[in-house]
Length: 212
Image (tube, rainbow, N blue to C red; front, side):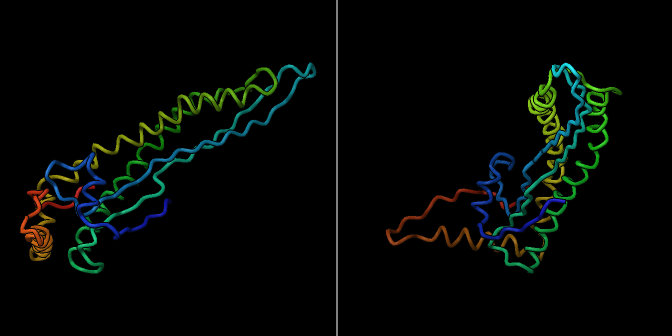
């Protein structure tokens, strides 16, 4: 399994920026789970070279590994570790982690069967000496690795269901309102007049938590 780490170095504004592609407009992102989809393929090609030295018979063996590595949970530094708010946001993000894992398990059989139909031909592969492995590697790179990444990426529609409006509101109201109070306190500090008597423009108008 991939290594799961927790990063609390960033404030919610920075995390909101990281989540710009998936967060709803106006949402303050307090927690984010990011996993980098990785696919690796190893080809082992034991070969028998014919007496002419021009042709080879190869029995390709394909080992494919895939997943999300690294996987990182970001929690806004405004919420100290072990606080109620931290625990609530962390629990929400663990739902995303579980969804990633469940999806990988769900697509495993389909991917294995698809690759088996293509590569388990029931006989040896015959071709010019030294060409078979290079040909297989090109096909993997051009066709099958992108296919597996697309299958992994289909998890995003399920992830979006976790980040419903009801879930945002539930998290925002949890811990006796401490999450909202913390954000209001940050906003008030930022909106205090500076030494020139000017107030900064507030960038967010809603106080929801915690999209991936």
